[in-house]
Amino acid sequence: MTSQEINRYEVLQEAAHGGRTMEWFLGQTPPPNELRKEATEFLLENGCLERADPQRSTPFRITERGCDLLADLSAKFRMMKNRVKEQSREGS
Image (cartoon, rainbow, N blue to C red; front, side, top):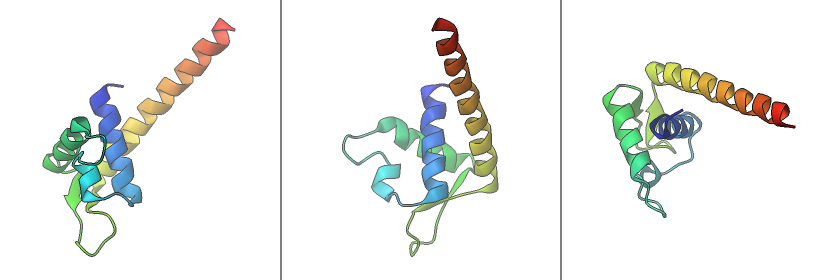
C-alpha cells in the first residue's frame, strides 16, 4: 500500500465511523498532516466523501463509491498483513 492509500483508508474509516472534527480531516490538528488533507480533498473530488449535515457529529459522510474504495483498501491491507505474518513465520 502506498502512503496515499493508507491516508485515504484512514480518512474513509473515520468518515464511516464518525467522531472526527473538520480540523482533523483538513490535517490541521497537531501535528499538522498535509497527507490527510490531500486524501480528504481527493476523496471529495472523486465522489467518495460528501459534506454531511452540519448538525451531524462528523463533517463528512462516506458515499457508496467511498464504501467500495474502503472495501478494496481493507482487502489490500489484510493481504499485506497476512504476507507480513507469513514472512515472520518463515523467518522464525
